[in-house]
Image (cartoon, rainbow, N blue to C red; front, side, top):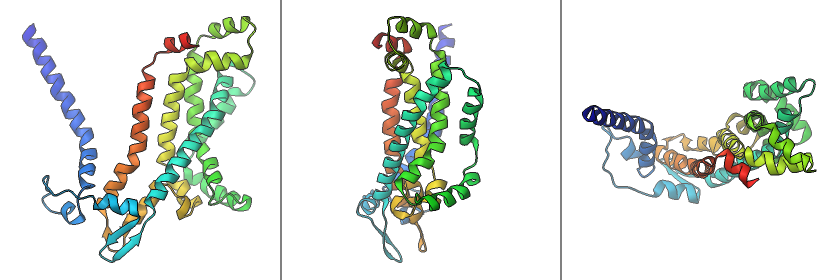
Length: 285
């Protein structure tokens, strides 16, 4: 029995190691490429032992990309700031609008509520190219083309439906009797929502906000068409590394490392928060 149990633990450990290596290898390889020159990266066979260089990160930070055709000006740091600003602001607006709406859909059933909720969700399912042309025309008429406000507005098509449906499910899982008991004490709906519903749905709100941030950060099509170079995020700004003299693999790898750092840091922070149980939130409330 002990021999069988030991064998199972060994096999489980080997399987887990293989899975981790399979999924982490691309990230580790890109991280290694970010410290190599193009010549080192394109060597055949690839070399695991090389002399690291910070030239790729220096080029991104200084905005000077050295290629065979000469020096090019790139705006990666500005693109990175645009991604942070657009994603954070879009998620904040979506949370401000979506969380109360999710609570209303979960607690107050009214005629047509399911149809309205499904219509909002359908915005997430709709292909971006389906709404891109009319959005471009409307934005040009309203003066919202190539503006942060216009991009934040259109990012609501990505963030708001996701937050609305995820948080709505968490509100529906909260026993309504807890809120009714709190309201018996003479508290208003808003006080009940703020002190009871929000703490209990905290893990769901954090998860929805994290997913919405990732989807907003990875958006490409809307920013490509509706924004010029000074407003574009890193997903669009990465096209600058494809030059007439070739593809700058080292700079692209360094840009990937820098661009995933904010989402990785947010994921680690949210993971620590998500382990808090719903019962802990009830005690806090």
